[in-house]
Image (cartoon, rainbow, N blue to C red; front, side, top):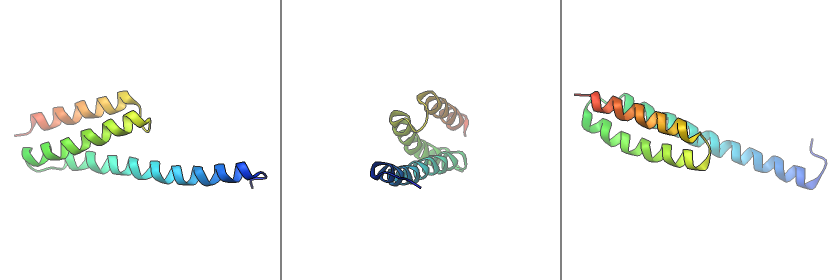
Length: 84
């Protein structure tokens, strides 16, 4: 267990940050899944817009690497573009 006041505070902060990061990553996975499971192109395009915004935010905050965000945006856009 933490021996110093600052270490106790750091442990509390880590728990809060872990929960926030986990929620953000789970949300990202859900948004990507929504794009991939959309039945028609219009619904997929709407879901893509939301997913791209979330990926940009996570990339800029450092939760995921910027290149990973770019790669996922590219793959999803390609996926939606091929839909009929």
